Amino acid sequence: MGEASSASPRGCAGQGLPLMIKKQYNLPDLFYLDLWPFSVSLCIATHPAYSNQFLTERSMPKHPVLGEALSTISGGDDMLSSDGPQWKVWRSAFNPGFSVAHLMTMVPTIVDNVATFAQILHNHAVNNELFRMEHHATRLTIDIIGKIVLDDDFNSQLVEHPLVTAFENQVRWMKILPVISKPLQVFNVFRPFVQWWNLRQMDTYVGKLLEERFATRSSRGKKKHVIDLALETYLKENNVSDTAKLDPKFKDAALRNIKVFIFAGHDTSSSTICYCHYQLSQHPAALTRLRKECENIFGKDASKTGDMIKADPYLLNKMRYGDAVVRETLRIFPPGNTVRAGAADFFITDPDTGERYPTDDWLLWSHNLGHMVNPDLWGDDVYSFRPERWLIESNSKGAANRDAFMAFAKGPRNCIGQELAMLETKMMLAMTIPQFDFHEAFSEVEKLKDDGSGYPSDLSGVQEQFGEKAYQIQLGTAKPREGMPCRLSLVSK
Image (cartoon, rainbow, N blue to C red):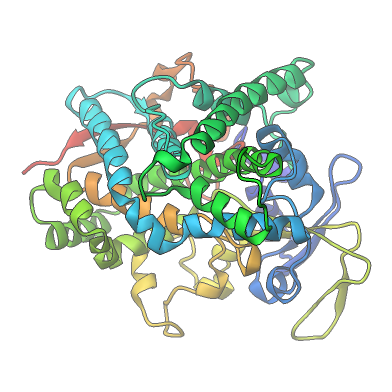
């Protein structure tokens, strides 16, 4: 572990270290990494033949480290880290709000937020400004979640918002296991107080909003948001007859899960937005092909794209290459992972030899990146950005291995927000890629030092991982190094 750490950039995302160890020691697709007494001990799977055994064939419970990490966001007992009947109740309650059919009714709202994002990028491009794209992408995704889930206009892309500010600060103080990337911050004596204050700020705002939403439910029109559908489903399925006041159990769960939705939603989409722009800038042929697709679907005037999507949201389904770009980006730069708890009665079986491997007291890590850059599953070009692999018929040479695509996890505990993530990211591509040329600016990052972002603006030491300068760093989850510093220019007509 020490050798892998010393060969990696400071602050890099912890998910890269096991892959370096696997490659260095030529380890198989299931291997153990004993980190005791410094951290939990890991059983790492990088192939669906192993991970499916604890994700789909028998869905093992989430490991306690996930609940510990998320407790500073949710307060504990949230849908992402809980199990059993408790998880089923809330997954069932929130499912309707994240269905494709319902999300399509929310498209005009998403378009308006993406239009604000595009205008911000336009201002940066016109002024040739150096900036970190991750900040704006995060604010975009949080604003979308706020409107979709709560029908609340955070408007944090343009002005500071107390909930969003507290949330962003809380993410920077998170303790992420099994690899701790910020030990001085983790063991900082002020950490518990900072986290308590941030959590209080978030709970106060969301709690007040829930009460107001419940009190005005009869005076609103037919249009409903995630929280409204969740309340209806909860009351119906749990036979709650007293609707004169907001059910305390529902309010408590809604508080916890709304904060998790903000965390998980900003996690996937904001990083993917940054990496889509970056990857396309590095691959001109892919950029040209995507722009041509957008022109064929939405016409040459990019300023009209948003209105066209509002009029016919299903136009986004025609973006086959755009969809491939998003999936290929997620394959190379997945923001999160899936961790489960082993058990005395659960063994992982080698499908070829039949040998059984114990899991009791081990953290079972379905290593997302390990699955998606496994050459046995994807071919020798695993680190090559090739969206075309997603357009090839399955089982054909060079085709994407969809069984090994783990960006949204697998099984009954897959990501509830995956349709929203794909929808908003494709929409962002349609409304920005035809207008702007992206230019990475890692060499200029020192000019952004002390900009208040929390990023180090540091060019010392190792500056690449897996041959990539835009490697992922650990900031709550895996995010673009230095917040993706860049400049934009307007596309020549």
